[in-house]
Image (cartoon, rainbow over all chains, first blue to last red; front, side):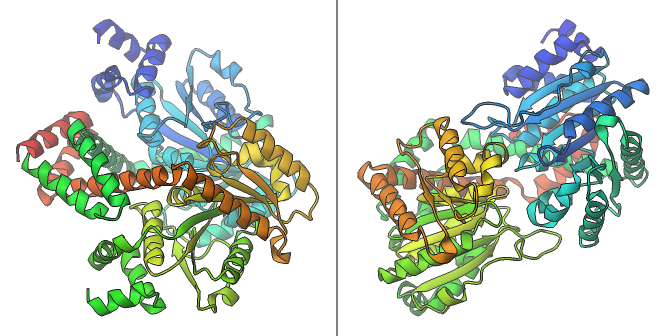
Length: 314
Length: 314
């Protein structure tokens, strides 16, 4: 990797950042090289995950938060994870708010990522892309994803603070539908709160929170907003900030980031062990043995034992 | 493991099956021993996954299917995966249909499994429990899970035929909400089809299916049912049967089961490699290095390289 490219990237050049992210996303060898080179320039950006059911207004919240941070002279990175379907190949949400206005801002970098085709784990990819934005000068990175599957857990794993955006109508189904969403939130936003049922939704969230095991001793705030009118955005930013201060003062931010590094190391080790183990010879041997297992002449356990014995001796 | 226990298990003794499943679920050493011992007695039961959104009536469909199979003198195993919340600890669905009547039938074995606490993969656990039921005489195993996260993919991975149960109201959100569900189905059931919108739901499913990549050359059926009145159950069973015959005649059932064995072997290898690698010494070394990574004096990649070099030399 040439020094010129690295310099540009670290100075916040958008074209360089785009190229770097593409390499990282495609798991290209140059991607790892870039991540290694920029690593010591990371750790400055605060990472906020924003998730919730389709139609809750996540993109609007992200858009307005980005503008607020820009008013505070911060550089903002936005990673929008679009869960795409492997068979339609298209974006899941037709009503995605266009981010054109913030995208035109020099201090904002927006990147869309597909959640499909990330067998290595979306969590890992999201964290890597956030690293690139971090090194290239973002003060805050907003990670947005729709909470309908696994991707919200991946994003929460990559975030320092996780914001769950709901709507008043979520009230009924809060407990039933998305237990996962309830558990990852450091802050709840009841958006579109001019619609009926906003207060009931707040109550429903509060009830569920009583049963939630303590999260680092932090009590999640519940904020009402009407994001498309800009209402409640200050409160959301304020609550994110309080959570950040809390994590910093208690040392829990370092703990959290330490755990992230541990997970990262474990993933990288696991990947490399797999590559080492499954060479052509062992793959071929397994293919032959599968026939015996289908015929019930051997068990999968026997095959694994044989393969491991040979690996340990090699 | 004593021969008496194994004999009882293979003869279909329910108490023995319960004990075996508990050992398997808890990943007890005796669980692996049991799975090894019974393996050559497996492969006879046909495995049907049944999934869909909360409230679609999956349990009723399972219940009625089980009765139908009993009328055909088949032995039926039912595995109901309850996605429980790590923080409430309770079952997700309050309106779970009690299966008491089928449970009292000598020829039916019902087992509930929690989806939580399966870091080794629910797919694996479900397949293991299905193996126990298979060896202990089930002709068909019904795997039921609510499709709100990852668990429906796990169940689909363990099933020969996957049935997705929807309701007429699912029509609007079929494309938006659960692309995952749409992709795993070999058969769609529009249950509660006496409600308005059933035909539109069928049309919506048909539209989405046009965009679906070919699944083993099979065109998924769409069946309307009113399960609590017993309507449509024959058609569901008939469609499952057609899919089974299709898989058998084209050799795709063996292919499918072969792929499952391959995945199983890979999982077992991965687990064992992790255990071998992460001994106390390497864990301790990693903990020390994490501090250096947090301080940005090293990158995770450097740490992984060091650890792997030492592992390869050892």
